[in-house]
Image (cartoon, rainbow, N blue to C red; front, side, top):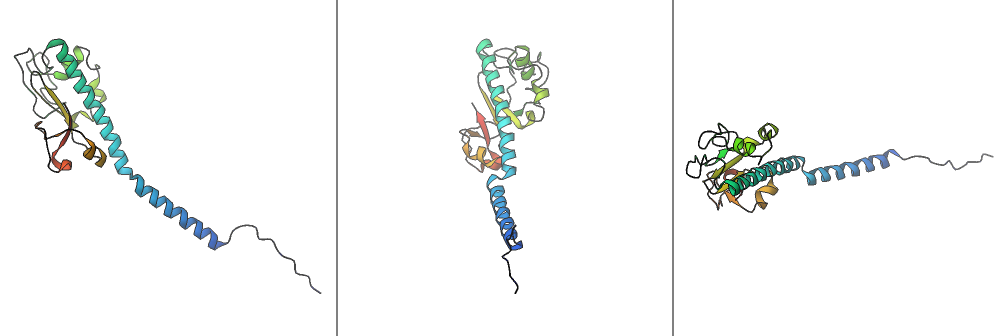
Length: 177
């Protein structure tokens, strides 16, 4: 007489493994869609640009509070006002001895910005624009992430006109003023 013994199954069947792999894959796809890596990269870039923008704005205000004119002016009456000018273009960059030239250099020479400011932020500088007069400043950038495009408190066009209500992604700049 033969005796059949119950054999203990150790391990998983192929079907069980396929089901587990399918569930993990579905969860990974859902998580990847929720995080949107490109949006996260854009948010990081916008945060860095926003921080540099705040440094420029704060340095301009500190410069003005001491000298009673903005850094793109040679004196209170000799100004070449920036109108939607990037940081790496005159009057923001250039010769600080010329009226309206070298606002960044003026702020660096007066210790409002670090000496290597433009070197450290060479990639970001062209994305930031400045509009101002002898007594005012508006610093702006064009956000790339959807979050910053919808959450910015102040929008303006490239020339600094406030109240930009057109498509923010194409024509509006987030500003500090």
